[in-house]
Picture 1 (cartoon, rainbow, N blue to C red):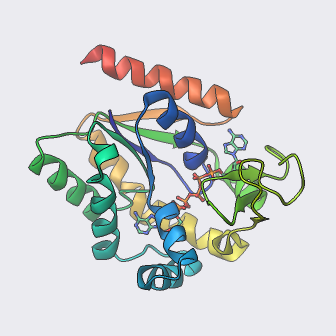
Picture 2 (picture 1 turned 30 degrees about the horizontal axis):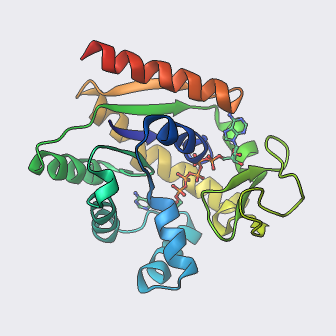
Length: 220
Ligand code: AP5
């Protein structure tokens, strides 16, 4: 399956993507994680991305699309992928459509994670991520690690993302409403959007998403 996951910052896209990708045996492709990996390796792309990310803005389309395309063309993504954080504006959505069309492929579904704004603020405020691998995500209240400050998965140090400060989160939410939300209408016009209520336990949200994807497959 080829799936796009959309939702405001802190909605739980990364958390859900890890379970959904495993259940569906497809790679989880997160542009945010790809940028953070470049930042920790101190690449030129990482240096460029960091300046935009720290301000809560989108990294320019040209570099983002090239990076996402390169990742989607890796052998493990031949039979499908779960995109998390890409596309993030209508230009990126159009670029993705062009790419898929040129390969004779199409998206199967766009899962829209719906979470009230006061809840995303709580989720982001308590989030802690691993320095070794930003896909290892915890929460001080909702998902505390066994040992404070230490990643359960790999033993790495847990820290608060630089872009999780109150001011940057406010900017990221504004960017989400103005630039990313329009892709929901873009994909609604293609009949691809499935809205998933994303409040409640992580496993309940995963179950809702899996049921919705099953309906998508059954309807084909
Ligand atoms: P990115 O890393 O994609 O950030 P985001 O979209 O803002 O999403 P988050 O990672 O903040 O949240 P999430 O929805 O994954 O939530 P999570 O699962 O961690 O992008 C960062 C930046 O990179 C962007 O601002 C931009 O600058 C740049 N960028 C990335 N892609 C780009 C693109 N395509 N174009 C241009 N620029 C781009 O969950 C949050 C917390 O809640 C965690 O602590 C988790 O444990 C907890 N939680 C999750 N689910 C639940 C639940 N059900 N109940 C209770 N707690 C929960």
